[in-house]
Length: 119
Image 1 (cartoon, rainbow, N blue to C red):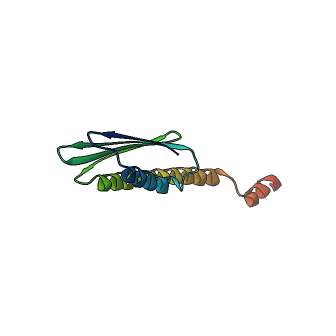
Image 2: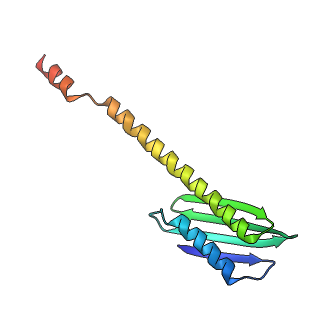
Image 3: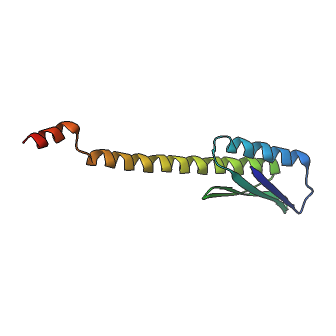
């Protein structure tokens, strides 16, 4: 995973970078494709903002969270991305399952083919 972290209006800390990397790696564990994440953290009037853009293949996920604590902002943003990823995975499963069922219904069972050929 390629990770880019940008800090605006406050000092960058290694512990915050490690926390962000750790949370995003947990998200990436279940993916089979290469992915990229860009995290922008900034401080605005004592409110900590975390904007996360996560890209994997054709899928682009975004989350923007603002809380009084930066660690909480990162956690909530990653939770939001997990939910988006789960919904996308469910959608693709249901979409493919529906297509498979339609193909199965269109086929003629072998017993009926044998009866049609004998008559």
